[in-house]
Length: 174
Image (cartoon, rainbow, N blue to C red; front, side, top):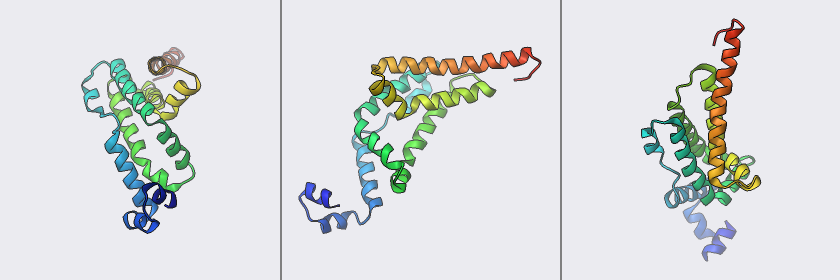
């Protein structure tokens, strides 16, 4: 609170008058970020019938968002691991990604085990840490990261279907 007051050019009691606790401060900050730099709106993605195109569109928009908010998202990920209040405030982001994953999954015709693998692969592709690893640590361009994740998701479906085919050949059932 001292650093906030100093940066704002006000006294600490003034800061506490507006934000009496960590929760109110974090809610105000989160709300401000969502207002100034909102996450991608997935509504239009539902109208894209091709599953690969839907996923590609979502990843391009989401990865652009990650790039714009990278330092903030890194700090939130770090702090959420050790600060319960930050983890609680970050829960909206987790729900948002789950909703996107489910919207993207709807476009794929996979069933059974293939669908479960697909769900996990899409979830992994949507994660900030996946983007961070590919773009920052592996030095991919965003378009290459998107292509890699598209291939990864398609491979997840193919591997699951292939394992079902092997089991069927051995007398198993899907």
